[in-house]
Image (cartoon, rainbow over all chains, first blue to last red; front, side, top):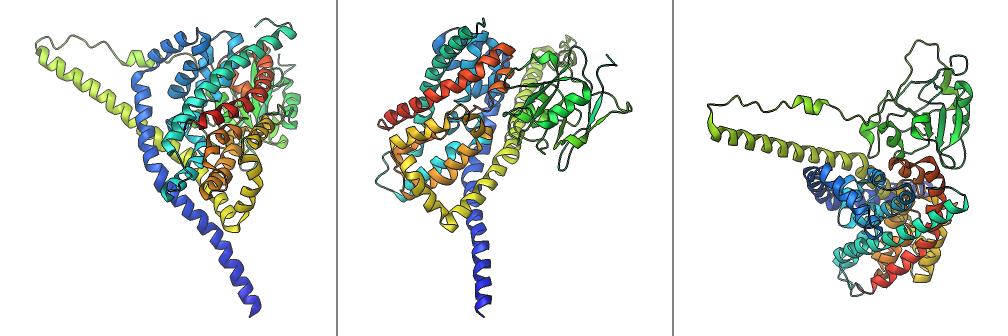
Length: 186
Length: 334
């Protein structure tokens, strides 16, 4: 009899693990997917309606200046082309600026997902995991929480933008130093 | 050239997809490029041996695209596996992955083969045509040709009809765009979002139910619960030989975010004020695995890639902790 209860215990807890996972899955599917599908559709439509030519012209302009090269250009690239095609906007730049642009653009494919999930739908959980934690506190009405999920998404976006600008400038400098040391003209 | 280069037939391996490809180098295209990180895999060496081509480590000395005869990758189905098929460069994936990732539509059987092991490569008997990539940059002319100038045939129909037809045409175009956007978003959700949810929720289920989650949260608390710990975490994730390994598919960042830090914030083990700096700390390695491919997408020259890879990695080591500090400062504004 003892052995049987042992087996029952194992079986119960074995399936319990997956029931717990299933519950989380249903929560994600009903809580995230409906809005995501509609949002993705809207943003894909907006990017196609604006059209490639106009975006290319804006990108060419943004690539000219150090400040916009690592802020506005990655933003345009990530918003309109999404991960991973965003990096193709490197073609508008000189060789010596390409590594820094890549660094800036790739560092923006997650900070952008809080507000614009279409930019990187395959890697949403970098953001969604933490967002889910904040949502839990929010629905529980936890007094330790002084901001909302939306506040955090906005902050993630703008801090991301500031960070990639600095990253771009630093990487551009490091690229120049490495190129000089190896005697390569980029 | 026939005396030097031999055609090799590459078949899919166990669980693999696509192919078979017949790889035949030419004097112009004589490089097999391994973009796997951590040296040249045995399969790439074997292919080079059989064909007579030169094998090259794409991370160290990437050649110009026009010299590439085939690429060997080990992508688990995120971004890299579609990049070269999109450029119509024959792609051999050592990982058994089919049409997946954001560029799935470009992964076709005539340019891509996966799950390949050394024993799946044989000298071709010449019964099959050689796989040839072509430059996909040539803009298809069909679009212009298919749209003949709106002939002024309705001379008697009047302006009203013209207006109606042009409104109809615009409406048709817009509806088409909207419908395609819908298809794209459903496609993305099914191909990329739901599979990841399945994987993450399975982990969350096990971690939460067994109580490993609490243990992990306590373990991570000294690292993720205060700013000094987050700076250390970021510095570790940014170590130049570690960051390319932690990067692929952002899987590690997503698991840490969704299975450990997120729930720990939800239960109160980690203060909500740490959320913003944590987002930057555990994602310090973002894109470090993808530098050569990302640069190639921007049509960077081989010298640029050679210098760009270390430049980005070194920069990341410095800027990772700096961005955590910036995020920490910004979290006071929340």
